[in-house]
Image 1 (cartoon, rainbow, N blue to C red):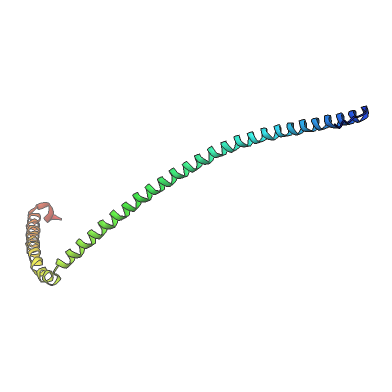
Image 2: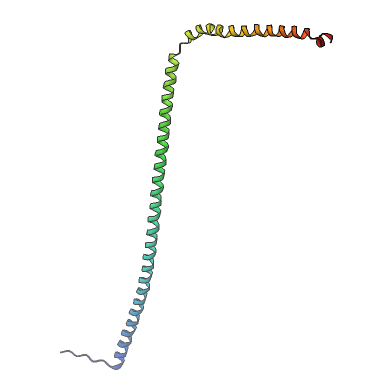
Length: 146
């Protein structure tokens, strides 16, 4: 059996070294406690940032959905308007193709005659009424004396 013996100085020196190591370990533990507190604060901050990022992403998703809905509505409106314009142009082309310009030009003198006969009759009536008014005015004594 081996036995070791130490004198008081050696015991005090080892005791002091162990005490210093214990104090250093306690200091390290305190530093780890501070680090743990910082990590908890970072995790809390990270959780808050995650919530904010999720809310921002949800907002962007709603914005994207709104833009898509509006774009679809605008596209449907443009499609409807272009279809309406296309139908209108087709009916205009059909109407223009049905018009026979030569026949219509041949009908113009007939239509013109139908309009000119009443105009001539109105002019004759106007001339007769002016003549009658002239005779009536000439028969008035006040007008003759002037």
